[in-house]
Amino acid sequence: MSITLAEVANFVGCEVIGDGSTKLTGVAGIKEAREGELTFVSNPGYEKYVADTSASAVVVSRSYAAGSHNCSTSLLVADDPYDAFARAMVLFAPEGDVVSEGVHPSAVVAQSATLGERVRIGANVVVMNDVTIGDGAAIHAGSFLGTSAVLGQDVTIYPNVTIRNRCVLGDRVVVHSGTVIGSDGFGFALSARSHTKVPQIGNVVIEDDVEIGTNVCVDRATLGSTRICRGSKIDNLVQVAHNVVIGEGSIVVAQAGISGSTRIGKGVILAGQAGIVGHIEIGDGAMVAAQAGVTKSVPSGERVSGYPARKHSAAKRLYAFVEHLPKLVEKVRGLESRISQLESVSERGGAAGTAGGGRTEDGRECPDEEI
Image (cartoon, rainbow, N blue to C red; front, side):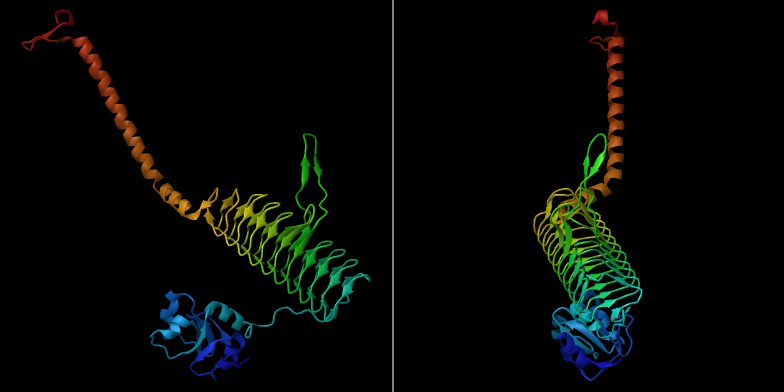
């Protein structure tokens, strides 16, 4: 496809500097871009490449556009170049997997299920009793919707997703392959003789515009709801335990694990492999670094790292100290050796003085009894 720079600018709400009639056929990184492609610069460290890029147009910041630079390439000026470029990519993205409108002949759909308009249900999908599917939803091959599950409008469920009974998904939710929503929470009453399973009778509620990656597990609540609030994004291989609440606009990165009944605030970032214990709170806007182990609540806006997680500034000092530990150990061992030698010399000196007697006033040695 071909689209003009002016049309792209109109679509993403940017200002054009240069030739708005420039034809664009694709997108690429600034080092790889060729003629006919759109690229972007959001990191000031990459602005030096703008003058030499082969791209036909570059999305840049207002500060770059206002400065003096040697650039003959057409520019799209945006408040947030990365966001503008991401939205422009939609115009050039190849079409992904498509489910034909209607119900595939191999799908099993209960008579009591309610399907909205323009619903797409792929091969071997199973839709159980009393399921509700909103307008424009697409359910890809091999997925399972449990009894009384509710899906909102324009939901996309990719192949082999399991959504268990009574779980609720809002509008425009996207769930990628292999994810299980509404599996039983890990709840057992422990005793010396046996571990009694606690029935998990709650559900999962996923609000509008949430996207969930591949092979994510979101457990149903013991009572009430496990909830992922509006606009949050969850990466692949994340564990969300029972009764967890993830606030609006939060990001949870791959292999993070959130234990039961923890509350994650709005706009929180949990980086890769972060581990969160149960029954604590992560405040609004907090950031948890990769592989951090959070053992207590984190205040709003705080940045934590390490294990146990502590303020990132304090953790960095500890990391720096750890780097010096080998030299410190060598130094301590050297000091211990010197102290041992001094103690040995002192002991020998004292013993020699006792056995050898002393000296007379004229300097000659004499036995102890003559002193």
